[in-house]
Image (cartoon, rainbow, N blue to C red; front, side):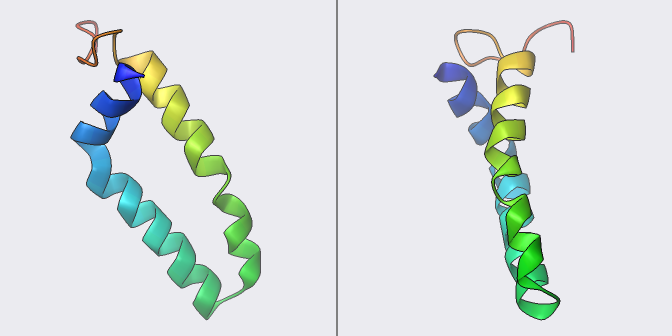
Length: 62
């Protein structure tokens, strides 16, 4: 769980901008872009567990 909090601490503006971009794109172009929203938590968890250790600190090898 600390990995998720560490990634959120360091990249919260990036993830919020992704969500806003998808919502704006779906409102202006097509609802089909809303289907990309379920992919965001998957990629968020992947990057959190790959880049952060058990204490929520960024791993040294990156």
